[in-house]
Amino acid sequence: MSQRFRRQGVALAVLLCSALSAAWSQAAAPDREKLLQAAAAEITAGQLDAAIGRLEAAADGGEIHPDAAFSRGVAYLRRALSDRAKPGDYGQAAAGFREALLLRPTDGEAGLALEQARLLVARRSANQGEQVLDTLGLGERVLLSIDPWLAFWLAVAASAVTTLGLVLRVFARGTAQSAGGLLAGVGGAVLAIAVPLAWLSERTASTLDLGIVIAERAPLLDESGRARKGLSPLREGTEVRVLESRGPLLRLSLGEERSFVVAHQVRRLRMPSAGDAARP
Image 1: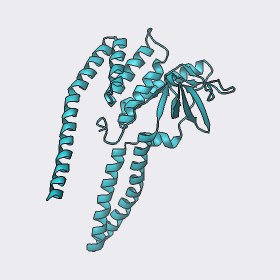
Image 2: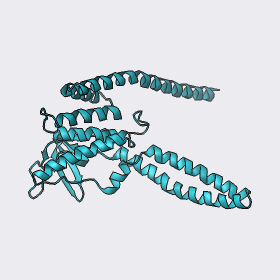
Image 3: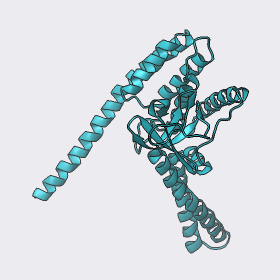
Image 4: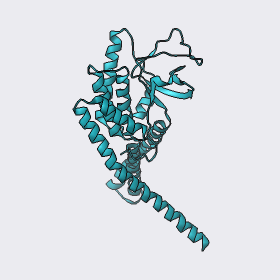
């Protein structure tokens, strides 16, 4: 009897936590909507400093949502293109758009805006005889562009198709049996790809410590903080993989290189986590 009561108590606690989580999400939604509406109005009116301040305060307060990140990117990009531009605006814009993509990988508008910000930085760097480095590997970029939930549901659909095909293959006759073999083969092949893809994309998104350079130039340093000779500084908007923090410095992975930069020259992005409410 006591074991039964314990199980009922655990079940009640789970239900209570779920109810509180749902209530919190519903309570947070109106506040987020007010934030986004106020920021949009300020951006439209050209009050970019006010919009940036509002969105940055929300981010500092723990607000993690693709729409908030995208709005922040828009505000920074518009200021970067205005006569009130400040150093680092392009990098901050890229960080906002990149964060929106991490939280919602299917956001095509954020993807286009990120490419626009990168193109503007690349053009400016080319005019100054410099080049923007690509510090992330192709595999990491591909995995970050995949929505783990889409890959998961693709795996579910492939599993259903495979099961149907096997049932037809075993119990049907004639054309239906042949069709079952084809379905089982196709479904199994898709399943073999979708399952590891969903796992790898989720693991990459949740474990990769990604940052964006928000200084016009971030010199590469050794562990003592001295500039490394013969290495070009990282340009604004460059995506970097952060390995660790060491006081005022960040240790970065740059392909085969391991270098340091001053921490405040890089904005570390909010990465999505399992069950993140911001994800679709």
